[in-house]
Image 1 (cartoon, rainbow, N blue to C red):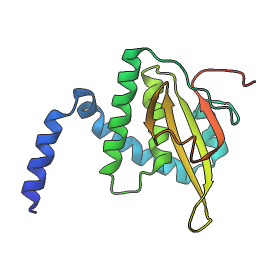
Image 2 (image 1 turned 90 degrees about the vertical axis):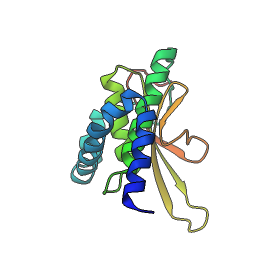
Image 3 (image 1 turned 60 degrees about the vertical axis):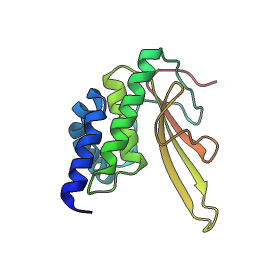
Length: 161
């Protein structure tokens, strides 16, 4: 397949994308690079205060209005689309950081979760980060059933019980 054909196909699909996604695609792409640099350059202890209110392992999903749910879905779509086109690795952690940033910017309540699981074949420990806003899995899908939650940060100051 020629480069021209691929570019034309991408342009056609971009025309169908929501305006929000098109407007935020380049800034999010850049933010993913910045998030990756910060993750590599800072300790988690330095980053943690900027992720939200620490909740320990108590996952709390905030309630959202229908318009906020739509906006959260658009943010997730934008982050996931931009992550596919980065020349660097934009795995779950940078995506979660950027999604948290945009959700905070639009004042959408969120929960950022970190989880661990033992790989089925190798037995190695695998880590994952995901962001949820109400019933919307913004990035990383809902992974509560596959990963043991080891850390939760939320936009809302809630006291865990």
